[in-house]
Length: 355
Image 1 (cartoon, one colour):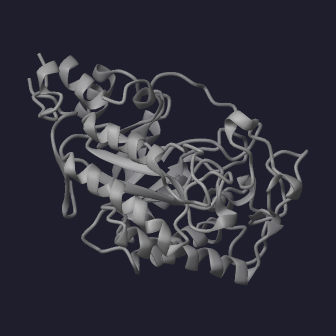
Image 2 (image 1 turned 180 degrees about the vertical axis):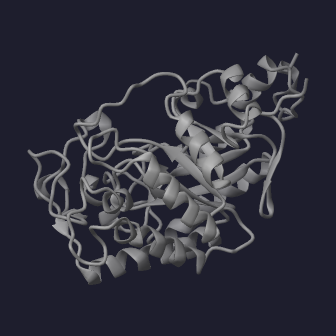
């Protein structure tokens, strides 16, 4: 029986050779937002390793939108050059380069994980963060600044400008990051959005910024290239954003021309209770797919070939997004193909290891 995981999928004008996507994973290795050879080797090796889609880490649309000072950014035309080089290599390996555009909101200005991950103050190279409401992620942290109308318009404009640069850099898939407690997710959830204007309160108001960002991105992103949105389908916290709202939003996004929902969960509040385990997020992707008809990506503790195959073969999702397992095995696509006895072309430089 042929593998469904290794069957191609066409989304708009782009055909992925298989259903394996490398999730965006922060490398905390950029300087002033610029990619370098670490990113070339990190992303390029996973293209060599057989994944159909390689999505670059959360790439900030502005300096103040970075999670850490070492995050990638796309607010400067000069940042395009190295990304274009990386994307050219990914395409040469018959893989598709994607980018995730993001703004960290109140979770910005943090140290890299190996430097403790804590909030940075001015003396440590930190900066003021922004959010829908002046409420910090941790009660011990300095509160973010509440975004006013001009600040909201700047965020929208920054996403638009970054999208234009992403096109110039040769990306072929665009993902908008509205998950994991970053800025757009902060607007979506009533646990972080206490506004009383047009951007807070009702469901329609809380999703407004995400829809406006989607529209701004679409004004620069070619309509023949795939557009994804990553969401956290639940906050895993009482009174938070939930699956029902995720289904509603996904239905609206489908109507707006979004092609796929990359379904993750959590990240918004420190008191979340996540029941970790293999496939723990897959039911959310399955529900959104079944209830809206939009294509979905499943993520989270997907580590084995048979597991990934079952998700695709049973129709629970259209893509599997793999993160940490691909750090353990950059050649994950080739590994999974061998385990599933799927026919897959190897890079000619590696072909002698195929048998």
